[in-house]
Image 1 (spheres, rainbow, N blue to C red):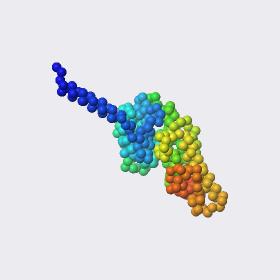
Image 2 (cartoon, rainbow, N blue to C red):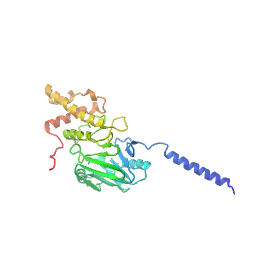
Image 3 (cartoon, rainbow, N blue to C red):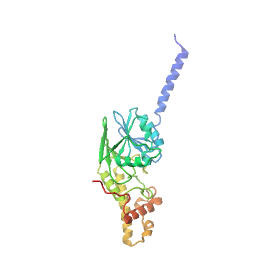
Length: 299
């Protein structure tokens, strides 16, 4: 027997469900950008960008930053796939990049970092940072999950400890933390960098085969970058060093060099007015007192 009440109830329920499903996909997750097939950038506007890649067997995440960022990152992953998160990979030792790992450990992911970074993390605990499950050593390690391979390239003494650059082999996408920040001068007084080793690392990165790049920090308006950003970062460092040596040759008093150096080529870069003189001071102290940090390469 036909029931109008039942018919209306079922109909309204169906419409509600369709509405929910439609609303769930009506707007993209904030800060989620597909860089290449199955490779995503997560940039919620907190000055940190992460990356994740989806294979036919599971998900690999690069960089968790902090717990708030990591929770948003996990939500963005779940908006794309319900496949398990198998790995969280960290780029280097600094707290502002290694926080939030517990979010991914709680869903079963293994956390992996270069041994140099691990040793520092163990000696310098932080309330938002947990120690990784696994470490790796040497210059390179590859992880293959299903149909996807991600390469981990240790670029040596440059910034922090254990600095690792990641390359998704099939899609030719790189993830680079801290050592390239597109369209911004060097950070403040350039803490925990070895300038000349940094240049060497950038040259090594330029030799990698990639077309697109995700950076942990960027001031570019583009949703993702490329190898040209790596080249521009190296050229800025070289141009700054050249400008300082030009002042040396002019006989400019040491303590006036920071005010004398100008680089009009980069005046539209972020923090040019605020940080350029600080960049010069760091270069001056490196040149006059020796690079920091420094250590001999192990045998």
